[in-house]
Length: 107
Length: 116
Image (cartoon, rainbow over all chains, first blue to last red; front, side, top):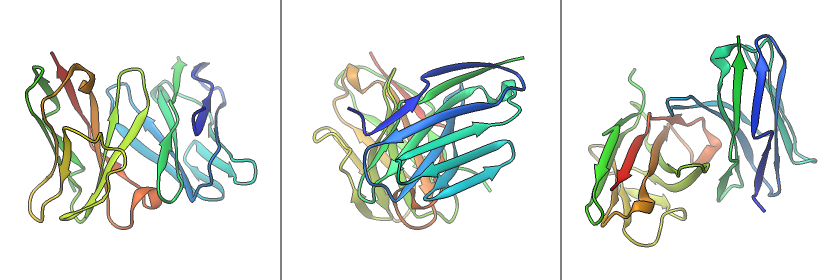
């Protein structure tokens, strides 16, 4: 079993839809990160969380430490949001990645 | 302020050759991380380095792989005697301060290695 599980694996949405990507982990963590990998392969770090909620533009990330769960939300989705979203956790001496959620937003 | 730079962007090697991947961190960053993304798989951590020190190489294959981050110049990920299974995208990231993901990491564009 992977230390980090993401769902869904693939997601197709219409432009404007509200999108949620989930991440569950099975290890104790000191921080959780959401990354975005564009079709060309480039990776951008979106959020680093250790508790609560963060917001940046149309992106919102939440984490529930007790439930070992995090969500990434995209409001008013746009075709340029199409990418792979990767959840990563840092245990303090090791870190693990989810296999990613491939998001396609259709105009 | 230039971002993290990696070169080459694409590298083709025949089995048995050596591959050298270079990573120049962002200006002011002294921490470098290497990751590998195998086809159809997610990112995996390989090694974390500070200037002249390897902090954590727990993700590095035990043989053929090595990494360095000298006092001057880029970080180098070296793969000796490459095999087809080494074909992957190799990403470098840098951060200004403390290790692992305690600071936001800035990723380079990656080097795509193809072993024929």
